[in-house]
Image (tube, rainbow, N blue to C red; front, top):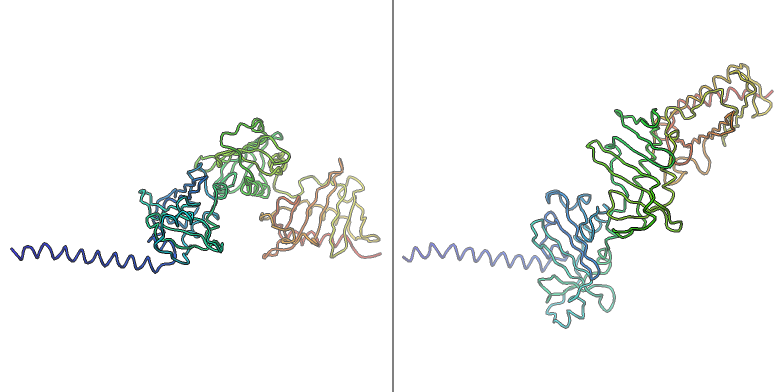
Length: 459
């Protein structure tokens, strides 16, 4: 009988001993830890829900994918309260890092209820809750008032309010975020590589672009290859468009009634993203709505001009798209060399005269035709992002060359600016300061060689 009791009680005693050891080890680990998440024994990979609770607002953030993805994938987080919207990736990354890096500075044990009130912990200015998708609370942290020196905030875990500690204000301040700080301010969220159709409607025209293989085609109202530089600029403008001010979710502002520009991006999986520009408040900007944002917002006024575009703007293949007979004058300015300026004197391919440099002769009238045909054959080799500053591509303070063509009929001018060279030797170029591209060095070198031949030698 005694043996039977031993068989029953010995495992119980062993389990109890193991439990006591584990609890002691856990308490020791918590006592030694300085990072708050370590003190709460939080595993970063288990966190699926983050709540930031302030007296005036509760923000609830949820991971949109399985917890196995990890909190480092900040693009997977969504704000579900006070409204549903994506989170700004950088701000979200900073928040998650801030929570898991925050450390305590000094412990204050045996705190009385009166002291809790004095420390601002009974009605905390900020509570941070971390939870799993199953609803289990992993950490519930209350952050109260600053101490008398103003260097730290009082803080405590909700299940240990009698144990208070100090957290440096430089660790707390980055966590005091509002929903406006955290929400993704992008008007649209898309990958240009996945876009298959673009519908762009404005007071100027209704344009439909379709991607065929790797090339974009303007399919309506006309049909021609679309300029990669212009499409790249369009994508850039839409990706960089940010809300600078938000309106209430149920706003019925009269400025939202008219529609001036409407953009629909259709992806390969037939999902769509839409942006609509409405009326304008001249002191604030343009009112807008989009499928990305849950409420109306205001954007910079420049975007309307960037999207209200004529189909001809997107024409591609040649940088100067007109017949040689239309050209009346050509002027190449080079700060580091003599300028070349020629003017048409008749209808023939050889009917030109040299205005600059003065007093020069040439040996072959056919040189004019070769030069003009080479110039009008220039085409972009590739597109490049818009530079932060024009000097990044060599357009300021001194550009490499400026090519200006004046047309015969209406004196309209077409200009191409050439900047510095990229790592492959090709030239950075722009025609309007909005779209930037590369022009093959072979084409430019050929053009400049024929320009040099036209300059000839002094008489």
